[in-house]
Image (cartoon, rainbow, N blue to C red; front, side):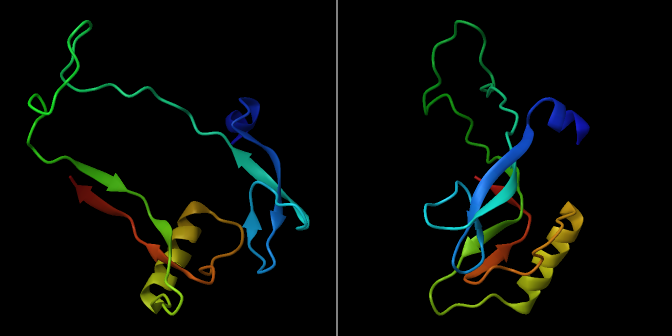
Length: 122
């Protein structure tokens, strides 16, 4: 964490609190300001596979038909107006927060469910 602070990737930020109690960033006019921790992720250049310097751009004909599998991290998904998350998803979110070391707010926000970590193939 010290390295993240020293490099400026973690920094003090200011947000606001929505009427329903949820924090918002950036701060919105008319809402009470709250202190937050900002994070600037590292940006890495994408390197297309199977290309050499000076080669022509890839076309659909060049692309491999083999499916690629990748990891999807857990995330919140907004629910429809009448939908409610299952107890399984509430427990999964609490476990996710615990593993991340989240300091507070281990309950799902109203109107959201939690999609657990999974692999996806495209």
